[in-house]
Structure formats: structure tokens, C-alpha cells
Length: 637
Image (cartoon, rainbow, N blue to C red; front, side, top):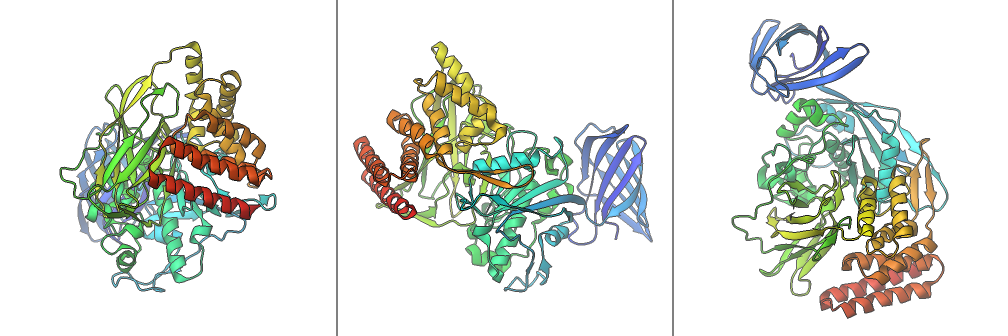
């Protein structure tokens, strides 16, 4: 056997070489990364892969030859490798390297795991504890051994336990708090690609998710993930199996692996597996969406491994496409083709994107997504918001360029309750802020944009909406210009995406929003600044310190009421956001000890939507929300 990682040097050039032609699940490839040495520094030059090399073995000597695909302009495409007893030569790009065997693994990554006090990190699961497919041998699998089977060595750093300062703290994590924890942790990371990934074991997410991958719009791409203990805890074999899958799935995103049904959105696009990707037996699929057979069908057939195509990426993907802190996840900011409607659509579903008539420059662009079933009753899942990735949104800019909206946080949903659309529940709606994401602001200039959405239904159908025009107006007055400038800062965009944050990394953004409120308080866009400040004040905030302690700032109901009451009176925000604002305003009133006023706010919410003339079914849902919120606040009090 000659497969594994080899290292070598030729003058000031260094080579890491991966030979993958025998051993466990060989992909039949040779790949490598080239670096240049200068003094005490090392710089990345480029990568190559030989996809179908010819292998000639004679005794202890093996010769491998083929045509390489390079990320840089190589003087020649040919690649030749000769190995004898663990050492040999590699000829490529006009250079000859003396190489020696370094590891049976193709890549080595440092994994740091920190857990919040009260959580228990996953250890291992024996695949024979529950019925598994016949071709998958029973074995004890930890995250480390499962990645080792894929050819990736995970070296574990000293684990850390994060204590919590403050008693009785709500340990449900918001996206804003996770973003702050991420900036604190990644502040210690070098601003460069590195084989290093951080995993946070937190208590629970406010949205009930099992895990997320940290990825946002600066140099720190794909450098960490979080899993939520309360959603996956348990000592039964079923719970241990699910925990292993969640850890493998979230870390897979850090290696730049997309969900099984999203590989056509990669750059370049990759072919989807069976059933539009839902038939992939992979860590990267969702068990509940597996076809055929759903979760039982998945576990009955899953061999606890990545697919062949994913294995090629993990072992032989170009350096910047795999290393943490390098290229962005998936498509990135690259131009894509606008979503095309299917030639034939028998799903019975209709997807629509709606927007207000026009937006001021700097105004947060919020669209409404509506999914209905005009063809008769239909059953699908409720993950309509683009943050959960069953729905993607494309934005065609005034100049004709089309980009994919990419949310700051990637929420992985491991449950998909059925939603029945019928006469009693004819449609579901979601409000989505798409003005800012991991690529920055998407609506930075006046003009007409075209927004389309694509929803992947429970049966794999890809339902595409008609284009929705989004018009951004030119500023008219001097105040319009000043406010637009204050609203379009990068940190302000993050605050709108996160609905507020205490993070010092976003201090300049918070100061800009304070200036909008203080200097331009009567301007229409000041409502959005108050919205962010009010929602953040009304809830507490958990801050991970540099010393890895968790400090909790309690809610500030007085400031929350001040801002949210003004937002509710202005009536500028969309109906779904207004619903959220009034329920959070009621919670702030209750937390200030005025349960009677809290109930009155909820009654006002029902009256307001009645006066707006919303359809009776939606109004019934609003009434139920009001009553449920009253009950919850009464129980809290």
C-alpha cells in the first residue's frame, strides 16, 4: 500500500502530496498543494489534482502518471510520482520534489471543543447497538474515528468547560450571542486559512435547532460550528446515534460540504445524487427527508460514511476550497444564473415573493414568502424561511448580475413536521430580511432589482416563484443621504441580520444606529434602528469572554418598551415583524411587573390586525398567538 500523505521540498518550493490509489475506499486520485518558502514565511501557491492516473507497480516500486488540473498556470500538465518503500520523487510544474511518507491520513485538522457548563459533549456510538445495513461492519465510532475513516485526522486540543457568571440565566442562545462567541473565539485565530476548527457545545438555540455552522462575511469562513445539547442529549442508542450524525454534519459544513440537496448551488455546480440529493446516504443529508422511506429508511441503509463524491472533496479538494478560513462556503458571492421555473410542475404548490412598492436607500429590504396549494390539499414541511436553507433567494441587481442571498448563520433543522395546506390553512407565510448576508449588503444602489425564490418541498419538488420587483429609491433630501449612509455600514447590516447585539465587535454599528435615533429620530428609517435596539434590550445577552467565561446581561425592559412602543405606533414595519414587535413589547411590560398592560398590548395587536383587514384564517392565528403569549407571560409572572 502506498496511499497517504507525502511531503517534500524542491529549493524554495514545498509540496504536500496525497496519493489515493489503494487502501480503504480509494478514489483513484493524486492531488497536492504547493507552497513557497521565503525566510521564516510560507505562502500558498496553488493546488492540483490528477483524476484518473495510471498506476504501474513492480515489486516495491510504484510509478503513477497522469494529467493534472492546476489552480495556477503550470508550465506542463503532466504529473509523475515514483514511490519505493515510503519515499521517492514527484515531478510536476517543472519541478522535482524528493518526497517521504508523512501520514496514512490525507489531511490533519486541529479540533477544539468547548462546552458550556451543564452540557455533556458526545463521546462515541457503537454502530451495532441498533440495526444497521449488512455491508456496514459494527464498530465504535467517535467523531475522530469517523473522520479518520474518510482520510482526515482530527487532532483534539485540550477541551474547555465554559462557566456561567450569574444565576438563573436563560441559556437559550440567539444568533447574536453565537455571533459574539464566534468573534471572541476567532479573534485568537490567525487571519489566514488554517487546518483548525472550533466546536461549541451550547445548551439550546432559541429556534430549537440542533446545530449551526459559523460562517460570515469576512476572513473567518467556516472556522467553527455549534451543537445544542438540549436538542440532542440522551444516553439511548438512538440518541447517541443522532448526536454522532449532528456532530459529523456540522463539522462537514466547516470542510465546505453542502447539504445533499444543495450541491447544484456550489461553484462550480455539482450533480445532485438520487432523488434530487435526498436519496444520498450521507452525513450531510437530513434523515427525516431521506427518500425513499424517511428516517427509518435512512438508518436502515446508512453505512456511517460520506458519499464517494464527498470523499473526493475531503481528500482532494483544492486547498482554499477545503481549509478553514479560506474560500467562502458553497457558492460565495459568485454570480449565478437566476432560478428557472421547472418545465413541468405537478407539485400542486405555488411560491410567491412579495415586497412593498418601494424602499428608501438604506432601508432594510424585507420580503414576504407565501406558499400555497391552489391545486388542492398538499402536505409539505414548514421550513419556508431562507435561514433554514430549504428556500433559496436569488437577487438580480440593476446591472444584470444575479447573486444568491446567503444568511449570516446556517441553521440546520433535523426535524420537519408536516404542514397541511388546505381550505382551513390555505397558505403559510414567512417574513425574511434579505438586505444583508455573508456577502455584505445586497441593495446598495438605487434601481430595480428582481428577487426570485426556490423552495425544496418535502417530496423533493423544486418550486420556483415568479420574479418580484424590488425598487430602491434615490435619496431626496440631505437627511435621506445622511441616514442612508448610517444604515448601510457593514456592522449595521450584521445588526439587522441578528436583530441586535451587545458584541464589542459591532460597537461602531450600534453607535451609528444610536445616531440615527438621536439626530434623525423623526426620519422613517429611524423605526428600523429602534426595532433592533428595542429587541436587543428587551432580551438578555450572553457574552463569551476572552477568558472563556459566560457573562449574562439581564433584559432591560424599560429601554425595550421605549423603543418597541414607538415601532408599534409608527406602523412602518411589515405585518409579520409587527406581530413579533408587539409580542416582545408585551413580554417587556410583563417583565417590568405590569401583566395587565402586557395583556392590553396583546389585545391591541388583535384589534390592529382586525382593522388592517387581514384574512380571517390569518386573524385566527394572530388571536391564538395572543392567547398563548398571555398564558406564557402569566406562568412566568
